[in-house]
Image (cartoon, rainbow, N blue to C red; front, side, top):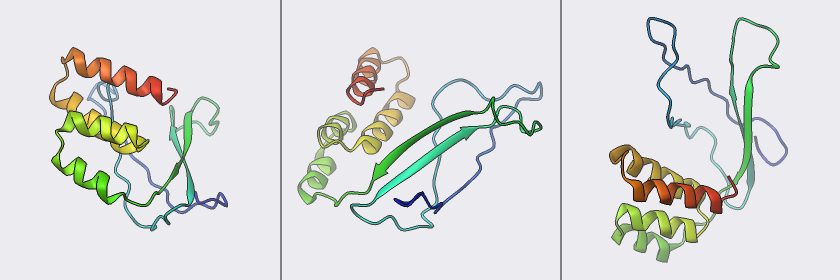
Length: 134
């Protein structure tokens, strides 16, 4: 939604089910949002994600809902150059220090997928989420 809470984008992401009806494995899921609505620099946007627990029921009270706010910022050319020269782990810190939370999390998610048993990454994950108030 834009700053006036007008919907600018909506999509549905069906979850895969096993033949037994079990929905996916636990873990982190990435969602891709099509760039159908150009976000303006400096503008606040609001998002909402709803997990529909039983789509057959008309009552939505059991659905799980999370929401948040984001703002598109002007790219910093100095930061972009530093990010290009950094390792993925260094990128996480660069993004976090610049409070670019989406980029920091996305980079860390990729690292965790590549190295799921890396205890140092797990600690970095906890530290980043704590610093974001999550």
